[in-house]
Length: 348
Image 1: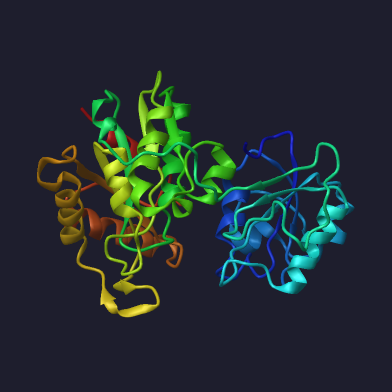
Image 2 (image 1 turned 90 degrees about the vertical axis):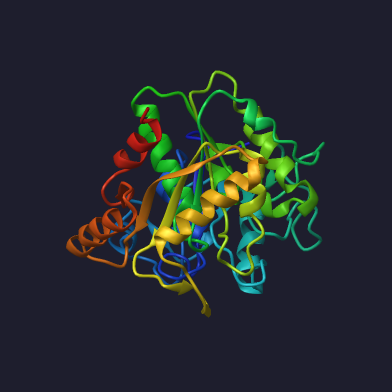
């Protein structure tokens, strides 16, 4: 399942357009092929989505599900991830209203909604709820099968969480397809799955089977493929991250792209945890990826810089400094395009 152009989508985005909890919804607005008819955010209702976010999509921002219903959506996508992983009561009531009105639900929260005792069941004919965060059936432990694939396998890795690893992958994937490269995007988080429809919700998988789940997702998309792009999660430098090692083991990457937020020196919300210089971060990722010969030797071939907090001149200066420091091509793939990154991946 995935969100397609046939779906008329309203995105539940309260406090998530300019706040910190709306990454999923903003990703859908930037990359999904769905017909986005409304964004629901009481804080930003009536304002311009393009002006608030820079996303080149003109979708009205409305205050409530009731207001969105006038625009005839057939799907409500939950685009926010509130602290604790569940909707507060006033937003949950909006969800009830949407289901009562006949809308199907795309749910990326940790809390499953199918058969939820507080929702109005049964659903109507043709109405559905897609709980995106589910462990796939039939998982096994990892066995390094992806090493046998002939095509390049690219994994985005980061100096922190939530800095643009998925967006970098999607930008490279889009450009590769424009160039006629048969690329496949392997989603590993809820937003990526909503867009691509294939992959694995890695944070829903039991830790013993995490590498095997990534391996299974990579192997399933490897037929007639010139390039596999695997969405990164977490960071080796984040004390709470559990995803990076299973991604390295399961995807057996041949190439790494390091993603970094301009000017960031410490893990967000953990000022006691420093981020090492990029040259050291690159060396560490390459060493761990090679893992004493157990994994495919892999190199960081480029750096993707998240420069959203800089103006254009400062962004270009930061990119030049990183290229000098690391000796690698660097760009902000959102602001300047991913050409440098794809060229580095495809270089002989």
